[in-house]
Image 1 (tube, rainbow, N blue to C red):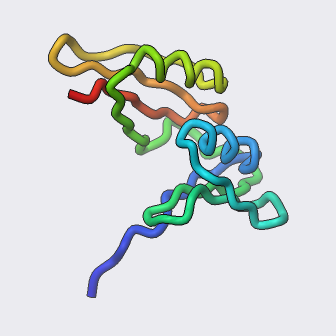
Image 2: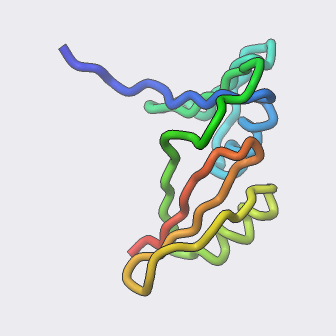
Length: 114
């Protein structure tokens, strides 16, 4: 018997707003539950979903999403325009990445694809 990863689900006080942000970032289609309590991106697996919670999870998120691009300057400009917040830059000439926070403060990284 094996397990297949079906969804990565992120808690949010406003899943539609956060799901819309990530749909724009990833160029994906947003599917809503009709109540706004649960939304998903795309149709493949694993999927990315956002669910309504009454109060935010305390502390730093324990995992984050990593993305790669061959044009980090263009992606940084696009993400900032979509209201991501730049948290920091890391690495050196051999490997560089930028950490951002989404509108709910969840961290994610964008690395230069080699």
